[in-house]
Image 1 (spheres, rainbow, N blue to C red):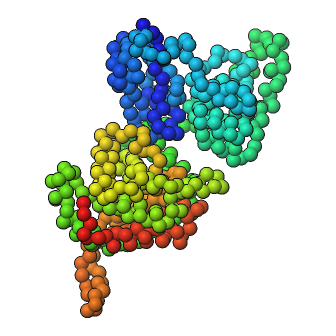
Image 2 (image 1 turned 45 degrees about the horizontal axis):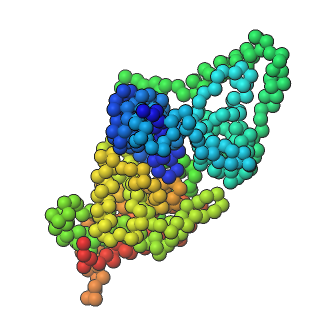
Image 3 (image 1 turned 90 degrees about the vertical axis):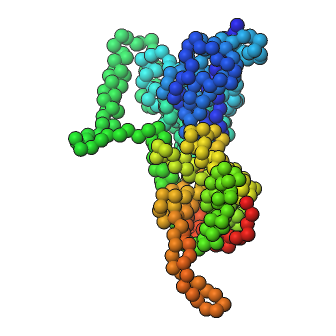
Length: 459
């Protein structure tokens, strides 16, 4: 038998850590290959992690609620040596390395608390030697020529003071070199003269600072007629992302009203036969997505993101669709290469993603790579909305409820009054790169495609 590490797997592009939600197996349990062992939450999706090898769970290294870096060990399995193949034992496991300024640096080293050191405690408020650095952060550091010495002094906003992608990019953008604290050399120059009372001045300020940190987040007071509800994990993420988006992007919203009478009549004609044939509903959403994808082809500068002073133009048209969950939260699965799917393909993709989103069965890749987002506020009975941009995209469209209205109809015989179906389209865009002309023309083009919908379209 061989003892091997089970590590936190990489669950999608840009995901560098996950939170252990629940262990599905306990120490001593026998695990089959590909059997789910634990549930993990990332900033994109909750998912189950299967075992790569069959064996017995000998030790759980990470408790529920802890955040773990991708590649870090989370459990020890005892497995048959033959089935483990080339997998190295725990003691012989090696970590890949990156080179930064000629020095080898581990690509992913789990964070391990160091033994208490009174002298080191004086500098840990600024410097973080031995701190975990994700492969992404190390890659950026290597590309930007940031030494490990400088990296240690960059303040981290992640768990355990880890440096996040945003932290290092903010540091690069500032162009400043973090300086070590002025008081650090004094303790380092007197190691031999240390006495039993020497650590006390350094330890006392740290103890005094603790109440100040705790006092910065007072528990809200409520009266007897109020209820205090803590946000769940997803709502906290949504809140933070919405605040970040409004801070990053200057939002502008343009509105267009579209006559979608032909589209409504076409759907009414085909929805029953489609339901009988495919076993699922024919909604307006795939038609909206098709119109957006065609408009993006006409105005490709809507399909971009921003990186500093550069605009990244995307070739793929990947449209995210906001889906309301039973919990009341929203999630945005992505239809990749939406411009390459016909109406039937879009309909099946929309239904599949929506059903799996509500059943909490989306995969990380279902939420990645979006270049533009569509939100159907009409499904809540709203006639229009001002949606907030999904970063790092630069635009998002909301489609409102379809309402019957009296309208003037132009005919060869003259103008007539008739009943038509209308809907509002709201287009929010990032005014840093999308001016009013582009943002307005884009939403007008989407409306044109909806108004010109061919009633002879087959599905």
